Structures are given as C-alpha cells and as structure tokens.
Length: 202
Image (cartoon, rainbow, N blue to C red; front, side, top):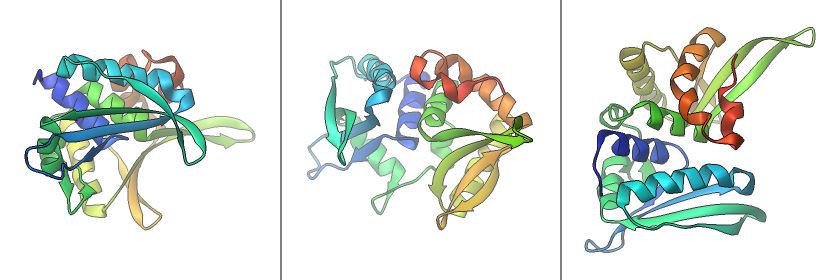
C-alpha cells in the first residue's frame, strides 16, 4: 500500500461517505472495504476504483448487482490496512468521524465525501432561484457534528451549521459559504460527468 498524504485522504473521504469497512472475523484476516452506488453512478464508482487500484497497486473490479430490487454497482477490496481503519473509525460497530481522521483530509478527500453525502438545494422566490442551501448528510450525534463544524472553521475557514433531522444531526450552509466550499471540491467533482451537478456555480 502506498501511504501518501493524498492516499490516506482518499480513503478517509471514501469511508466518511458511502464506504463501509467490515471487521475481520479473525485477527489474521484482512478487513474489507465495500462501496455500493446506484447504476447511474457507475462512472463515479469506476473513478473510485481507479484511485483504490493506485493506492494498493492491485486489481479491483466493479460489478453490477441488484440492491433491494434496484440495479446497482459494487466494489469490494480486502486488505490488512482495513483492519486498522476499522479500529480507528468504528466504535461499537458504528462508524465515527474523529478529529484525528478529519485532519487527514485534503481537497480530494473532501470532494469524495461531498459527492457521497452532499446535496445542493435551490431556494426559490416567485419561481426564481434566489439562493442555495448545501446539506452534508452526516447523520451523527450533535457532539460529532460539532467536531466537524470546528474542523471546517479552523482548517478551511468555512462555516457549517448543525440541523436536526430524523433524530440525528446533519450540516448545512448558505450560498456565500457554499461558493467557497465548492471552489475547493469542484476540480475533482468535475472529473466525473455524472457528478458535476454537485458542483455547479451557485
């Protein structure tokens, strides 16, 4: 495995978002990363697969499946390093996002996290868009979201607000902050045609 700063950031962004790491059943076994996307995001998963190939210097395939009755694509990769990441990011079988892990993010990791869990919502007045709202669906405890908010403020000088949703919490920001955030992630988002809608000029 090539443990560069960018590669660690890529893995953090993947796991913060849609990536799941399964704990091995025996200490000598590898952990396993799995990522599932809907079929229309196959191009995006292929892009991730290429990043993971470069990190681990090994082959990895994207295959089509049926997920809860819908066509989807999945990627799986086993490696002993995922045992380490499972210990690092999972507490009582639940994924967490600690400050130490946040501090490993570079713009490409932020972009992956945003493409997985971020959404843009237009706010309309008299049928015309007058502002935008950005949502990062973290769905974590309030305390964990407070850690993420502080990280973005300290590291990137970007302000997120915490909102409650479905008994957990997520993050949102306004148009002004959103423009600054999207400038950071746009170079990576725009590499993938099917994801460009997440980095439009607002």
